[in-house]
Image (tube, rainbow, N blue to C red):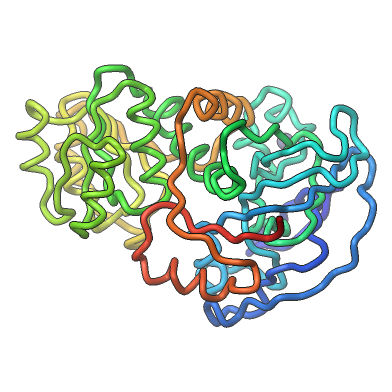
Length: 356
Ligand SMILES: [Zn+2]
């Protein structure tokens, strides 16, 4: 079940999940045009694995970075970390044909001390479906049984394929990493991104007061409709945010990086936390260090989340938290879906409908 792949100087082992049937495959790093539809034969699941007929697969920015070459992933690779579907055949206990499922989108070995302790993000074989392994943009997807969860009741197939990666990422950032508490104030930067829309929903669910920024007035309006109390333009937001939050917010949710980090660090109160999962505006940022140590500030990095965090987040979904689906494209129009994501006009998730 473990394969090996060279990545730069390091060699990492990966769990060998399989994408079969009609697949959207990254073939060359030329942008959306480098993704082709291909047919692969259908097989029976290996021991411990479950084969799932995919109904819907969710695109993430990761897919766009991969097809543009920014992620330095060697093609071919089937796209998408997120998916939802119906079990077609099971070679693992506890699952049978007809079960409706979603996936914990992390590839790991499930055997090391970190995995056994429920800290899959620390696994030496950690990876993400659709990046380090084949992904869910396919007709049939074979995964280890440990990655399967029941599809939350009440979600459409598109919604079920829209939440796992972004909600898991935002859940770990706001709970485990930043320790957001009820009654605290949360600022979500760059509210249009899927992970930011998830952060607004989770912030509300956890009982925080939520503020948000976006460059786009339309996205600021959408953020308010989702539950953000007040919204701000993305340029120079620190001063108005401090005025709106009695001297500073408790937590800033960051994924933009250099373009907004100075304002994010200026927006927190003494003892505040800035938690980040990405840096879409560049990879290096300058930090005004006296502001950080005099301010008792925490700058916290985070990526993805553990299986126990995924289960806690699923319980919040069952309790009524919902993802936002921006648009749905049939699998055959995967290039159009990626171009739509590339234009950055979306609010929430872009989903591929695979069957059903
Ligand atoms: Zn492990």
